[in-house]
Length: 81
Image 1 (cartoon, rainbow, N blue to C red):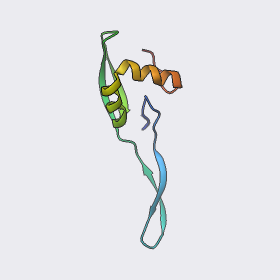
Image 2 (image 1 turned 180 degrees about the vertical axis):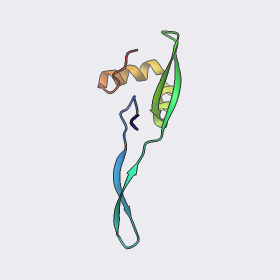
Image 3 (image 1 turned 120 degrees about the vertical axis):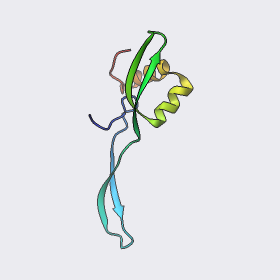
Image 4 (image 1 turned 90 degrees about the vertical axis):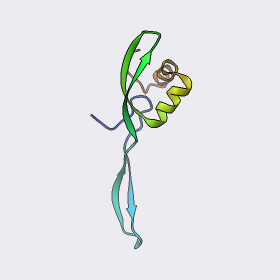
C-alpha cells in the first residue's frame, strides 16, 4: 500500500542529502503514518485508517466525524462514512 495519509493526502516528499562538500544525492522524506482504528459513535462501528500522527492529534481535538467530513468536502477522503 502506498505511503499516503487517507485523510490529508500527505505523501512522500523528495529532496537532497547535502554533504559538507555540498554534494547532493536524492533522498525521500516519509510521512509518519500509523494504522489506527477509530470508533464512530454516530454509526456505532470501528473504522481502520492509515493516517499521519498530525491527523491523530486533530481527531482527538475535533472528533473523527468532523475530521472526515471536512476531508470529504475538500475532496481528499473518498471513502464512505
